[in-house]
Every structure is written in structure tokens, then in C-alpha cells.
Amino acid sequence: MVFKLGVIGGGVMAEAIISRLLKEKIYSSSSIIVSDPQISRRQFWHDQYSVTTTEDNQHILDNCEILLLAIKPQIFENVVSSLNLNLHEKPLVLSILAGVSLEKLAHHFPEYPIVRVMPNTPAIVGEAMTAISPNEKVTSLQLDLTLSLFHSIGSVIQIQESLMDAVTGLSGSGPAFVALMIEALADGGVASGLPRSIALELATQTVLGTAQLVKHKNLHPAILKDQVTSPGGTTIAGVAQLEKNGFRHAVISAVTTAYKRSQELGSK
Ligand SMILES: NC(=O)c1ccc[n+]([C@@H]2O[C@H](COP(=O)([O-])OP(=O)(O)OC[C@H]3O[C@@H](n4cnc5c(N)ncnc54)[C@H](OP(=O)(O)O)[C@@H]3O)[C@@H](O)[C@H]2O)c1
Image 1: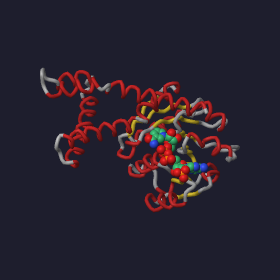
Image 2: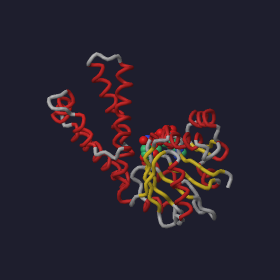
Image 3: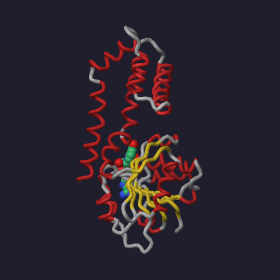
């Protein structure tokens, strides 16, 4: 095989993963090939990451050890229907497509070892949360390889595939929900008289620090909340406002709606 990793769909998520794999020296630029229909995007990949680019998806499939599918789920069937999949040496297929099941993937890639993967964009800074589910064709060596690849961009867990749409709703879509929270915290600071840059720095570090406290001290969020709410104090006054405005319900609904959307995308 000419390339260790072939990527179909050189968009946001592919870049988040590849940029980290290159930074961590898991792969060199010369061992990666990326396809994208836009010449400007291919030029970007070449200029920014020095990887080989093509618009020919078959060329990728024919020449890689691992195939990363990173196109939008809506165009999956169109893209695979144009490929000749009858290869003697079948690459390991890693699919990050939201909602596209192992069954559907295996229907299009018969007899291929396939891992359904759900990463998230903090991959860019090595803080991804990735969940993986392999099919029965995946060898233990290929599973270890997949785990170590995604370990290099953050945390990784193996889960039952039936949980994958829920994972998509939480950690796949979650960075957008947390970004809204950071933006809203900063807006609250600005509304209270803080300069924008200071408000954003405070908001970002508060979310980051709180997440690290919960993670590293293995602290239940409810205990952390109780620890910082003194009787008649400022924090409980703020918490009461969040509750009044349905904050927790809004976040829960965001995750469950994203979960349902992932199911819908998979059933199309
Ligand atoms: N973004 C996230 O946070 C996230 C998280 C987890 C999983 N995912 C999954 O990752 C996948 C990609 O998402 P994304 O956000 O990276 O989307 P994206 O930025 O739109 O990337 C998809 C890329 O594929 C290209 N493409 C379109 N048709 C193609 C074809 N026939 N052959 C090769 N490439 C083609 C697109 O080019 P054009 O723009 O010219 O169409 C685009 O550059 C999705 O399946 C999504 O469910 C995303």
C-alpha cells in the first residue's frame, strides 16, 4: 500500500483528526492522502499539511491501509456507490459519519473490517472524546491500532454500537453546546461591565477549570455546585435564575434532540 491513511472528505473533522495525528507524529505527511471535491480545499491541505490530495476516491481506496470516511452522512450512499469495492486487500474502514450504522456500512463495504467512530472537535488540541464500535471482521490488532490512533487525539472508549447515537448527541455535538455556554457566560460578564476580552478569558478558564476539577477529583457535579453555593450568597442567586429559565432542561433537550437527529440520519 502506498499510503497508511486515506481520507475521503477533507472537511472540519478530518482536519481536526489529521492535524493532531501529524503533530503527534503518529503519521508523516507522506503517508496520508486526502480527497475533496474542492480544488481550494485540496490546495489548503497541501499547503497546510503537505499531504497528498486527490479528487479520486477510488484512488484513495485502492492505495491505503486504513480508510477514514469523513464525508457528510447525507452523501454517503452516493459516494460509496461510485466505488469499486471488490478489492483483494481490504483496508480497515473507520467511519465517523453520524448515524450511519455498522450494518449499513457493512452493506456497502461487504467483508471489510469496519469501526464506527464518534470523535469530537477538541481533537485539534488533543482533548477529543472518541467512542468506537468495531464489527466482527476487525482483528484484535486492528482494534488496538484504532484505539491507539484515537488515543493520540484524546480519550477513547469502546462501546456497544446501540449507544452510538446517544454518544453522538452528547460528546459529538457537545462542543457546540459548551461553546454556547462559554459565549453566554462572557456575554453575562460584558453585561455586568467587563471588557469583552477579559470576560471571554474568565468564561473559558472557568469552564475548563471546572471540567478538570470534576474529572481529576472524580467529583459529582452536584457536590461541586453545593460546595460553591453559600447560604444567601451570590452563586445560589445565579443558580436560582438558571433553574427559573429551564437551563438544565434546555441542555438535556439539546442532547436528546441531537441523539434523535443522529437516529434520523441513519435511517435515511
Ligand atoms: N464536525 C463535528 O463536530 C463532527 C463530530 C463527529 C463526527 N462528525 C462527522 O464527521 C463527518 C464530517 O463532518 P464535518 O463537520 O467535517 O463536515 P464537512 O466539514 O462538511 O466535511 C466534509 C467534507 O467532505 C467533502 N466532500 C463532499 N463530497 C465529497 C466527495 N464526493 N468525496 C470526497 N469528499 C467530499 C466536503 O466538501 P464540500 O464542502 O465541497 O462539499 C467537505 O470538505 C460527518 O459525517 C459528521 O457526522 C462531525
